[in-house]
Length: 215
Image (cartoon, rainbow, N blue to C red; front, top):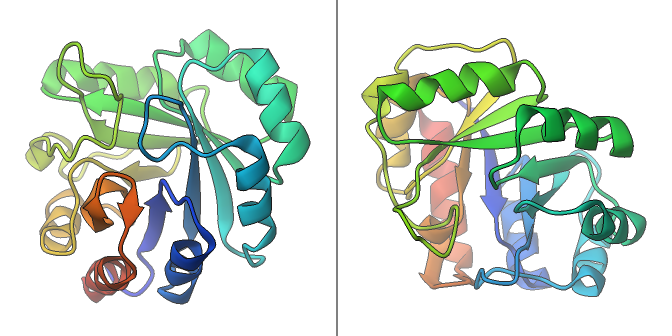
């Protein structure tokens, strides 16, 4: 809840907004490998973008129920620091991916009510980090990036054995309150810094990072 708050800007697709994220002080940049998403990037584009990321900023690949063939292709071409599993991957699959690729794993878990918190406990045993996100609506096309907020009081002052990151409907206007209510030291944003789906806005990125660090 201070200048030490770490920010992840997810769903970057071009060099200009990636540089805006770096300039704003983001600790993580996220590249989305999910064709249904308006933030999807090709492996070749991602490799070019990743090459521009300075040391000290974690390059993250977001995948949804990816098989080994896709993960092989991504990891062969794109220099990564973190794999974000954002689908229905089981704890066993998380452990398998972690062992196969030798990269830290962040597992996204959707939260809508208290019953979902048990999943966080399960995945904390196998993942290196947790992404605590808003659960998507039933039949939603996208598992994340929907601009939805969950009741932050559900996780107020809760802690897990691994680092965790708060996501789900965060914007420059509400991220300060989200940090204050949950005690999050890491926050993730995608749609909240866009002018249109998939179109990141450099001014909103800067405003988000400043608001997150102001807490």
